[in-house]
Every structure is written in structure tokens, then in C-alpha cells.
Length: 326
Image 1 (cartoon, helix red, strand yellow):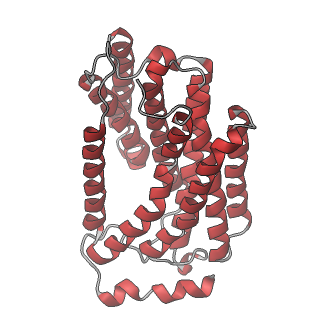
Image 2 (image 1 turned 30 degrees about the vertical axis):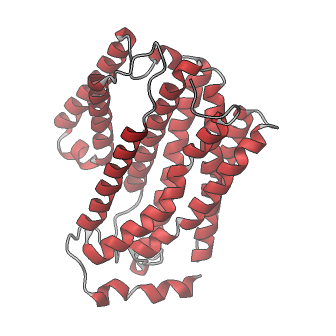
Image 3 (image 1 turned 90 degrees about the vertical axis):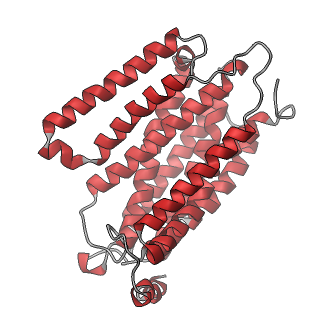
């Protein structure tokens, strides 16, 4: 049973893989604008609303299980996996916990590892696993997931560094002092070129093997790092670096399904791709956390920890300044 016309599955899955990249160009500026007007709670409220809508849409569009296959969802396994990943990401983001409460951090790290081990063991024993762990051990699939994990860290490390750099005030000796909203607009080239790469990659895939395409995409992402390291004296250079990064991330994400689907049984396609998306999300989160570790703290004109709305004068006072930097 399939919901795609013959030959359309891989291009469609490749496009789905870059949807989050497209959303970044809309979500970041919109969240920044809400934060400027309504404070941090408004921005997080938007995230909660979008998440709820996405959950309901996925729930309603879930296809009927094929004949002979169970439609049961391993809820317990999902909760254990979520708990383990939550602790991993929490410990990665709360660096002060390691320096001020080392014992607590070590205990939480042990619990995270324990939960992930319990999840792996339960998935191996389950007749209807959330993820077919045995299939994940295939060298090609394991390599693809490792590449996505490491690549996700690098991709969002640079993305976060660029946006933080754009918001750093001039008093720090670098940066542009942009508001959260204007800094979010820097992601527009990332989304546009990411979408273009996502559309082009399936066609290029017909001529180039997926592993080689992944390697080429990683080189493009590396080019974004080089551009940001060598040229960031004006906003135009940040736009170029972000565009190069977007193109590399888009082609990397779109090429990944070809590697996994080539060695995954059709019955386990959704499981394998879903696990890859989870790995990618964890990599993205760790990359953002690493950017926070490596970037010296500096006050910005953005909303940082403010939870109340600024005055109209505060909202727009920084907007004219960014044009002179283009």
C-alpha cells in the first residue's frame, strides 16, 4: 500500500526533508516581531500554537495501516525516548549546571543514558517497535544517521552564530546591533536557497550517487563557515553566507532520504526516516547550544529575558540603522 504515485515517493520525501528550512525563514522573523511587540511569552505562544496545529494535522492525516500490519503506536517507547532526549538536550543547554552542580548533572546524565538504553532494549523486544533498531544498524543507515547528526550540529551552529552576531551591539566591537525581528530576516536567503536546493537535488540525484551528493553538500555548508569567518563586515556578507548555508543544508537534507531508502525495506521506510528526522533535530539543538557556549555573552537590543512588551519608541528605534550596513 502506498499513497504516492509510482516514482514520486523519493522526490516527495526529499521535499518534506527541507520543509523545516523553508519554515525557518518565516518562523524566525515572525517570532522576532511578536517578541518585539508582546515580549518573550508571545513568541513562545506562537511556537506552542504552531506545534499544536502540526500535531492535529499529522493526527488527522495519518494513513490507515496496511492489511496485516498493526496500527498500534508504542506510546511507552515514545515517552521513554522523549525523556532520554530531553535530559540530553537539557544538559547541553544548561552549562551552568555542570559548573555549579556537577553531582546533579552527572546523575541526570546517567539517567539519560539509562533511559536511552531501556528504550533500545524495549524496541528490540517489541513486536510493534516505534523504530526498527535492527534496521538502523545497517552500515549505510547508521552512517547516514551519524552524518545527519554531525551535519545538523554544524549547520545550526553556523546559523545561530550568524544571527547572534547580527544582534550583537556595536559596543562589543563587532556585530550590527539588530533587533530580533530584523536579525530574523537574515534567515530569508537561508530558506529561499534551501528550498531551491531541495527542488534541484532529486534531479541531480539521477546523475550523481547519493553519498557523493551528501559529501558535496557538506562542502557547500563548509563554504558557508569559510565565508562567515572571512567576510562579515557588512550585512550583505551575512546574507551571502546564510544563503550558501541554506543551499548546502537544503541539498544535504534532500539527498539523505536517497541513502536511507536505498537499503531500507519498504515496510520500514517511515520508521527509518522518522528516526533520521529525530537525529537531525537533536543535532540542530546541540548545534544551537554549542553556539551559545562559544559566543561571549553581550547585551543586545533584542528582548533577551524581557517578558513585557517594549514601548513603540523602543520597538523601532533600531530599525533604520541596519539599512546603512547593507
